[in-house]
Length: 337
Image 1: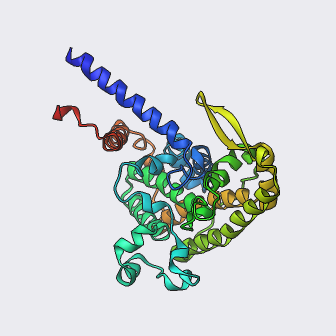
Image 2 (image 1 turned 45 degrees about the horizontal axis):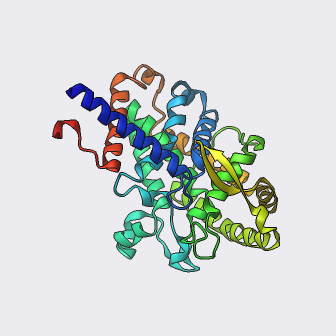
Image 3 (image 1 turned 60 degrees about the vertical axis):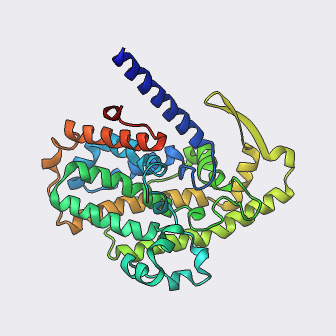
């Protein structure tokens, strides 16, 4: 009876988790998986092929891990306190001179603005610096499991920083009557057109100043946000309202989404903006992994091949994901029953 009860409980948990994941994909806004799950996985995967041979031994051997776990930060954001603010920064909250006002480094920013205020409006540029330091330390320690986890996570946050709508408090057009524009830009457009994106960049380059590079990316993303809102507004004004949206069957649920015709015209107005930001994401992910490795003294990664996906690493990963799920669904561990 006890084993049957446990089986039913686990089945219920998995069903709820599946429902949550499906629902998560249909909600646009700060709860939307940035770039969509497909794009995050694709960005991490392509970045691996840019690495030098000395790193590819290890990274190619674990390319499936880096691909599949590229979405872990999105899974954690609903269950782990402090996760959500790592994905964005509302630059417009700080005024037109935000990039001049905000300190380059986290400790300076906390001293000037206060930690609670900073976290409320997003910390992605500072967290990227922290995450890169953590990955460098993992390389120094030659900790295979930690290198993989941090590499996968770092790739996710870098991709997030390249999304224009992750740099504004009007992240989903909710302040301008353009609700849904978040998912439109980062999920619907790649879904329709990414097959034709040219995402190969070439070999990696060393980043001399990580902090400055991170803020440069955020600045570029924010500069692109104005055109996203402006072009969508202009197109909507001139477009037949009955043809702006369509209904598609997704996961056996009839879902309203932007029509192909509207999407094609919007994408044309943006002149390849989504493709450029995704390509830039692939470039920076590879560059950052490489930079962390160089800063760690270029440790020999061949020796880590046997450790990379050891049973211990896999068990730790499974335990961590189960912990997220338990916190998300408020499920007590079996030992507490």
